Image 1 (spheres, helix red, strand yellow):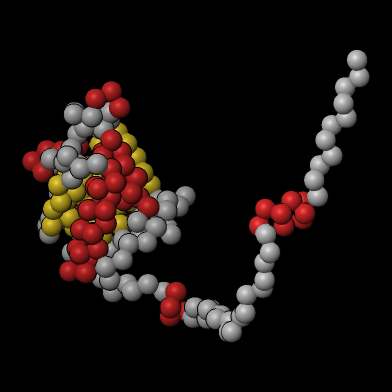
Image 2: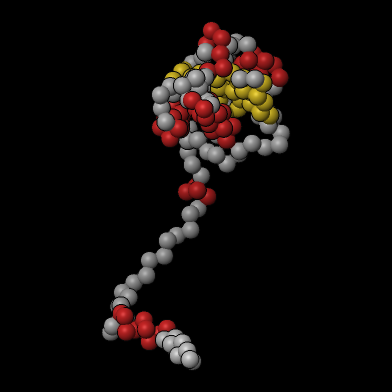
Length: 179
């Protein structure tokens, strides 16, 4: 027995017109063209804004030894980094991110760093916890906080805190100088 021929495809314009019905063009009274932003419009204010444009460059250094994390940009001297590791910088502000979700922690940390930059702080302590309550996934905030800090221009260096200041559950963060 012979099969019937497949149906002929409908013409696209005809099907559309049948579905939409009669149309008429809109009257255009004016066109609004957005101006191209000038250099000053594109540049964000220096104080209080964190940018993520720098990221990690090949000259920047991130190391993880056991549970400790260390990061510094190439512009940070060995002496400064050593002083930061030994806790010799005065901690000018703290933030405790315990109990926050990653999303809430990022927003809170962004606001805090912006405020610290605006106030001219150079060294702050970020307490993220050791991740003992994270279960099988391991320390969530500990890893993500380190990732965020590496990608923010305002951060020159960070290192795990000394035991008296939270040990591997906290970081000393060195911020850029206010200019």
